[in-house]
Length: 338
Image 1 (spheres, rainbow, N blue to C red):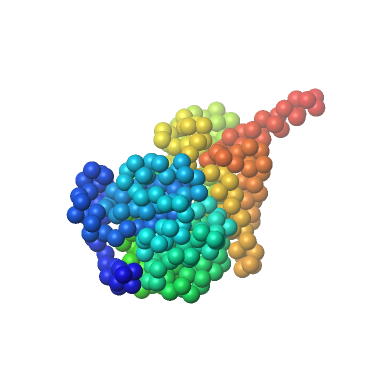
Image 2: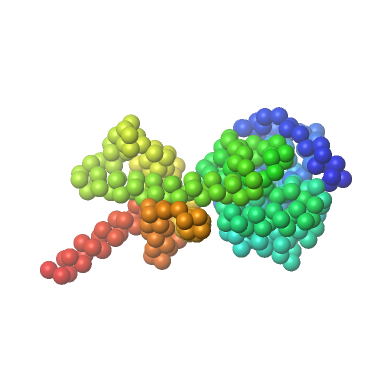
């Protein structure tokens, strides 16, 4: 049956972006085969919800059972481990924190490959080392299934609204099948090339994101020190050549914007620890390819320092507060030395 499903994968049509759970008819639910989902954290939870919204029965699991409760209440079937997900679904999306997590979920004692069906489509949206994606692709292929890497950009906000950008790597002939599902969770689904190229694109994006956030934080801090109102400064930047995503969509200064982590004590969003991890991946790949990334290396050092100073669990935009803290520490040292 799994092979039949694979052969009959078609594009179901453009997903309705704002459909509500209540609008999904029983006929719609019956017409779509179940989708497995492993990893219901800050990103995975809203992504799985969007699959439900668009009529896909979801079979899910997470290492933390409490993460599954909300999705279960919305109609998802919750199982104990990834192997059980693979036993019940021939299309699976995984969203996990790191390379070791991905290796365990796919190849561990209760991993997906223990019960994966031939012809299954496995899509990993984690941000991991491209080399690990390639290793997983080889292992999956040996089981007669297909693996694609499809990391995302856009953060929790875009995951919630279904406006993520997916960067997809894998066999091009399978892209349409992957696009069917990913289009229900994202506004942009871009084919990048062979397995691992999706990860490569994501690593490059996040290195630029970190550099941009640090630059925005330094700029805002300097302007405030010079007596500028932060909202006014942000307005000027966003109508000038310095404009960037960190300044106009995700400003790091508390009080400048609503609905962003800086307005909520840097809770939620994309964690500093995860940014440090992604910058580590960028640093490793830059070293392997002998690519000079001086600003990327410096950004990596800054985010690692932040993790050591208690910012690991805060959103990565908290680099603004970290810089302010460093500034205050220097001034205090000067006062004590006088």
